[in-house]
Amino acid sequence: DGLVTKKTYEKPVDFTKIEVAKLPVVMIIGRPNVGKSALFNRLIRRREALVYNTPDDHVTRDIREGVAKLGDLRFKVLDSAGLEAEATSGSILHRTAGMTASVLSRSNFAIFLTDGRFGLHPLDLEVGKWLRKHAPQIKPIVVMNKCESLFDASGSLMTAASEMFRLGFGEPIAISAETGLGLPDLYQSLRPVLEDYMLQVLNVVDEETQDDSYSEDSCSTEVDENQLPLQLAIVGRPNVGKSTLLNTLLQEDRVLVGPEAGLTRDSIRTQFEFQGRKIYLVDTAGWLQRTKQDKGPSSLSIMQSRKNLLRAHIIALVLDAEEIANARRSMKHAEVVIARRAVEEGRGLVVIVNKMDLLRGRQKSSLYKKVMEAVPQEIQTIIPQITGIPVIFTSAVEGRGRTALLQQVVDTYEKWCSRLPTARLNRWLLKVMSRHSWKDQAAQPKVKYFTQVKARPPTFVAFLRGKTELADTDIRFLTKSLKEDFDLGGIPIRIMQRFVT
Ligand code: GDP
Ligand code: GDP
Image (cartoon, rainbow, N blue to C red; front, top):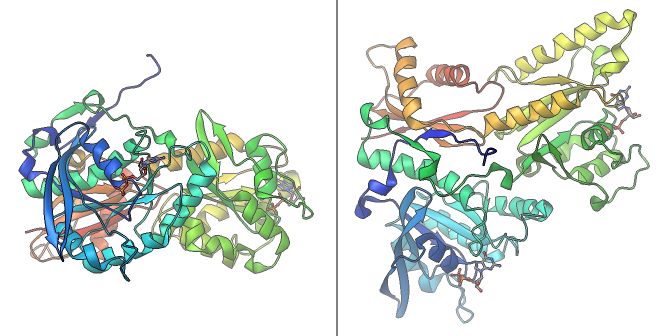
């Protein structure tokens, strides 16, 4: 229908044309009963699975191998009995671990499956520990299964997700093997890594071969970013106006303002819509309550914890315009710490200067100007690695700045989620490398190709040939150019480097 806009993506690898023997191998690993077989079956659909036995330590276990089809992705998928918990054996691991390790050594990637409905299970932690020890080369993608009923209650999804962070393998993906929900997210996170792998295997760097474009029609898995809504945390010291601002955002008086407010977690609606996009407020009730009770400087400390920061995609840091007008510095120590940490953890940062109404009037116009100029400048000095961190000026009591703020949050989020096709990046790389003045022309690092391996935040890998690493100045140059050329300013982006032979 008319509402669907078709985008054309450039995809440098056509998995459907690659012979099976060359496809990347992905193993599904996890404790029993999380739904490994269910996921395996869904991925291979009705196609045949090859079953073979692996005798190990007097136990014979089946390993199934099949060709997975996920959108236009193809890969070999292995479903093993996994790290079975044997009630009788002292250690859950020892009976099948040897076999699992040998299968893992033949795999290129792993899906670490957990049960999102159950949450983090002690055995999941054991599996994680085991993986780290026996297959350190594999960085698994954590996938929470059985989430079909959690998608409507994003609170529970977030709780489960934040528990899964404890596994230490990054952001989990929520799916339901039974209903197929969330598979587009799995596709989104697998595609860049598998593509990256195939590029290495096929050694595809020729410009000509990368010019094929595929329309989204060729991809049967539709990608719906709204399935997991944008997660926004509004943070700041007490009394800067967070509760008032929340009322403005929700456009209704759901959040109680004032120190007496005895808020319960459920009394606050945490999800709302802006321009048809769902925005989820991260643990708003929880930290509002805490900051209300604790007016001391430590009240920001809960937000400083890594776990809390990681639960949000975008951190909106609220400052008080009147305080800034009367201070030498715009940001207090705790605010500087949060801003820096948000960026270090790869979150999108939006700074809000609230209570601008208090700086109106003729006598105050110079203060107004001072605040407008000082805040962006100061942020630039405390976070020099990112230019153009967005600053929005609001008056929560007057309801001003709502649209600008939400628009900015959405824009920042979209940049944060962006994915640049490898073919485009490599065309860009050629141009940009010729612009760069190398420190030592003779021993100049050779970037063979450049690819985005991850979004949220955009993360790139430069594959190098030879022995010379990119220097910090080279990385800074690439970062700056990426930001300018692909409109990625104001968000953290990461560039890693790897050598290829
Ligand atoms: P495995 O031991 O990890 O291979 O797990 P199975 O694939 O045998 O699944 C264990 C149980 O979880 C079975 O009863 C499945 O029907 C159930 N299950 C698997 N996937 C889902 C899912 O997405 N949602 C729900 N609700 N149940 C699931
Ligand atoms: P919180 O502790 O950060 O949640 O701050 P509150 O929302 O409770 O606000 C603290 C005080 O600042 C209250 O008295 C609010 O009425 C006031 N306040 C909040 N936003 C504004 C604003 O934009 N302008 C003015 N003048 N006062 C505000």
